[in-house]
Length: 120
Image (cartoon, rainbow, N blue to C red; front, top):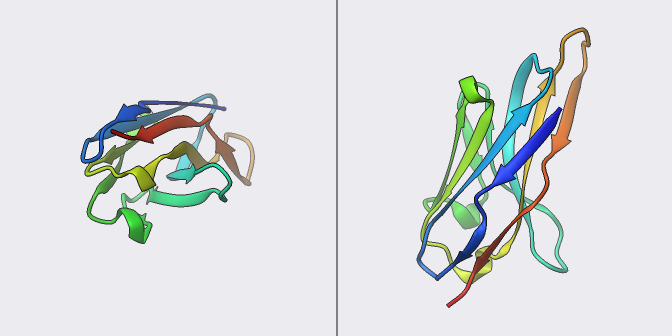
C-alpha cells in the first residue's frame, strides 16, 4: 500500500490550496482517510478526517475554512483549504485506515508530507 500526496506550495494569506492523497495497492476497504499537519517544533495534529460514510470531523482551527472530501472510485482524499493564514503553515500528511484482502485486521498508513507555506 502506498500513499501519494500532492498539492502543497507557497500561498499568500487569504489564498487557497487543494491537497490530494491517492492510495494504491491491494486494498479492500478504506475505512478512514484524513489529513494531519506538523509545524516545526510542534506535534503532529489532526486537521480533518472523513469516514467511509462521508462523515467528516475538523479541528476547531480550520472549521469553516477547510473541507475534506473523498472519491472512493479513485481511492483519493482531498483537502480544500481556503482563507489560509500563516498559522496554517506546516507539513501536511495524509493518513488512512484500511483493510486488505485476506486479513481480518485494520491497518494504518501515512503518506509523505507536502509542505504548505502561507506567507506574503
